[in-house]
Length: 342
Image (tube, rainbow, N blue to C red; front, side, top):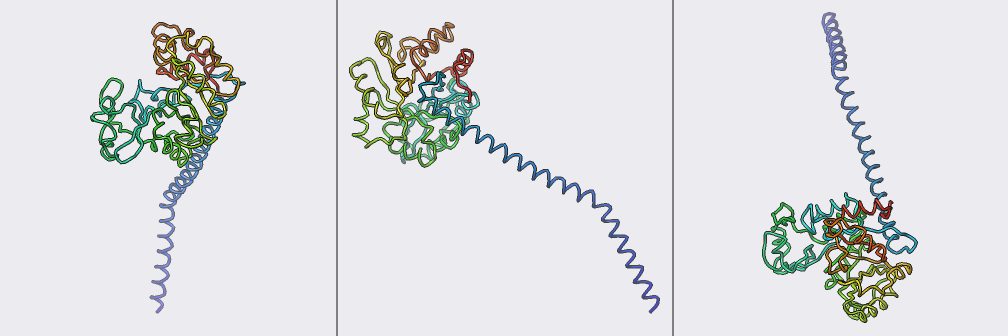
């Protein structure tokens, strides 16, 4: 019995030694993983804080951009990228949108079409021939079929980018940049509904077809809600109709006028600055000469005449300039201290 007791004590001592040895060898490992855990917690908190800060920054930016559009006391000029940054990415694509946001563009302009099964997508032309590796009208394809095609870049080369839906675009743009919706007038109720569903209505400007009065819009779609930003395109080839169009929208405070003219003599008597002082936005295009009497992007860049082009538009009341040269226009405005800082 005595021998048995001694053996038990020896076993007990060995267990204690083993326990101490295991603690000695495993303590660094335990400490290591504990440190990793705390680093992950701190990193997670830091990421959440950064995300919150980024969200707050864009939220503040959007509110300031909206105020800028309708505040007659503000002299800054906003930049709208035509079909987003199409010189560096396929037009009307998510990469072009992301590039516009990174560049500091204020408004991303897009175009809408519809698929065979009724889904709104981004596409300028009636067919997908020019912009994709497919052929035919977008309405001949279901969304599933449309998603199999790939977008071409500005050189006509096929990329890996797919055609985005309007909903996908809004998800990416939400809270980051203002949106101008062109070629969406025929889908007006669906456009407004999707903007409301996605919480992007306040940052969206919807184009109205050329020389269409507000009365004509409301006859077709019903009374316009006060919170919808409308942009009637006012074509000055018919000056009498242009005056009627402008007058009809004065009762809708969230209106941005988009005058279009091919010769300056058509607008030499127009006072767009007066409309600006009344709180209406004035959107001018520098895309090509027939939209602006020759005050276009190519003249600004290739002939080095930015003051005679962009400067002329600003002098005559532009609060927004839509351009195919967003980066150069931004640089010009910053140099002139005309691009708002938020």
